[in-house]
Image (cartoon, rainbow, N blue to C red):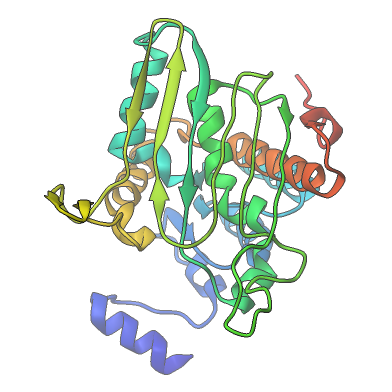
Length: 301
């Protein structure tokens, strides 16, 4: 919408705007683009950006189709451009501290990772195009499983709709769920992101020589005790507040990779495998059984 485009440009002091993204791709002085549009638009935009020789940052998921993601990864490789996927939690200081500690052997061999999470409910139109809870919401947790624990080999998931409207009807339909997913890595890894009610994100990793944990971010860290109990601030209830720093740092990492001609730190294969896990979780929830990732996508060396 022209009026909305003009208003956003004025607010953020944007010098050039385009009603058609293809006009942007024609600019010779543009080296890279960020694709932050709905998932069902990513495939075509990525292919056209790669053909134009632009490096690409794309929000998750790359696509909902394994075949299309494989084709995208082949195309960006053939064109010699970077593709970085927006799994911003990797750049949150809390999760980064856990990752670095685990990878440095700070808790010995990691055995179990517990990662409860919840986020605010989404609108119906968004839900219909999102790919569902496993490919849209908990895909961040699946990526975090790989980031902290290594490759995932098997998933067991259960999902249900627990949030209802005042009428009693489910708030989320279209075959989607709003609660409870469990994921395993070779019998050693389990996650339970629960619900879409508010932003809540924490992680605990238990190892052979110790454990490391980070808590949810809150507006402040006060604790008040009185006759009614112990009280503290609620977790930050909007993901842009909770992860503001991580969004900045992931974009800095993308720019550094492009400028330094280094491989993007979160690449197309990371985007692919997170979708594979999500599809395995959806299949597991439908069929009420563990699903090995090789049933969804047979990785090739």
